Structures are given as structure tokens and as C-alpha cells.
Image: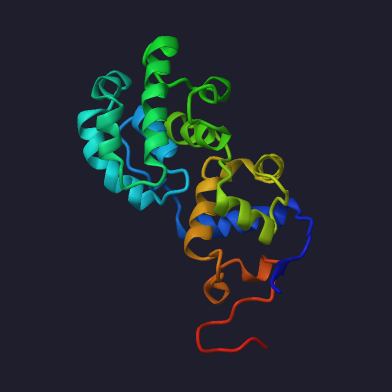
Length: 225
């Protein structure tokens, strides 16, 4: 059975991993479409247990009519639900979008707060969502640990842990300054398109020689040696 071997990384190895990922995509971007900090926040809330592509398809029309908390609140839960009904858990998510819009207006003057403690008090917003918003909207070097980051960090490994919080703390401790701002985006993209959950595409991975995952997945048509 494939597994990750426990391995302690030195700073040189960590820097080399991110140097290679940087070479592939120097300026990685999140794939959720948004026009401001509020729409980013809403998009990330909607992305729980859903694909970015599916969220983008639903929010393109929604954000044209409601790109501020005030407009979203005026639109109302029923209408929000209609816009996002193709997204999983859309009923509960519509409630959260309206509730967080109201909270932003009542407690933060309609502005998205730029600190984690305030963000996680909003309905539907957890630590991962807060970290994404802080990174993408406010330029803070946070580490949003989604399923891709969690998997890649444990498999390589970079930072091993049984919880997203443990992996986040591990990444925070080892990632060199030049790579901190984009680190979680690089890991997301690597996990989404190369180090896939069902079958990692090891044969085309630029990190193969630095990866402790065994056995490596061979190219299609080839057997493992």
C-alpha cells in the first residue's frame, strides 16, 4: 500500500521544493473568481465541499447583482439560494451568506476585517477560509490548509500532522520567507493537478527525487519496478 515515509526536512530541501514549484508558476493565483474582498469571502464560503469551477459558474451571475454586503442582504436568502442552487449544500450556504453579510454591516461597517480573529466570528467562516481571504485580499502570508495542502504536506512530506491546524503550524515553521506568500497556492495547484488524491502522477512530478511517497506511480502503460 502506498504511504508517506516520515522524514525531517532541512531548510535547504524546503527551499528547493518551493524553488521548483516557483519555476513552474512564478505568480500562482487562486482559481475562485471575485471582484473584491467581500466576493472573495463569499466565494470561499461557497467552495466548501464544492469545486472552484462549480462555484465560479454560480457566482458569475450572483456577483453582478450583489458585490457588497448591502446588496447581498437586499437580495435576500431566497434569491441567493436560486443563484447558487447548483452548488452542494446550497441551502445552508445561502443562509450563511446572508448572515455573514448582515454581520459585516452591523459589526464591521460593511467591510471585510483584515484579521483572523474577526473573520472566524462570521457565519460559515472557519480558519481555512479566513486564511485564504487574508492571503488573497490583504496580502498576508497565511497558510490555508485544504485537502490538497494537507495531503501534499503529509506525503512529501513537508509538514506532517493529523489535523489541518498541525500542518499549518508545521508549514509556518519551515517555509522560507521568499516563498511564504504563495506557498499554499503552490501546494494546492500541485495537489490538484499532479499529486492527485486517487493516483499521484509521479512520472511527471518535478519533486520526485525529493518525495518520500512510496511506491511511486508509474507512467500509464508502465509497470512498477
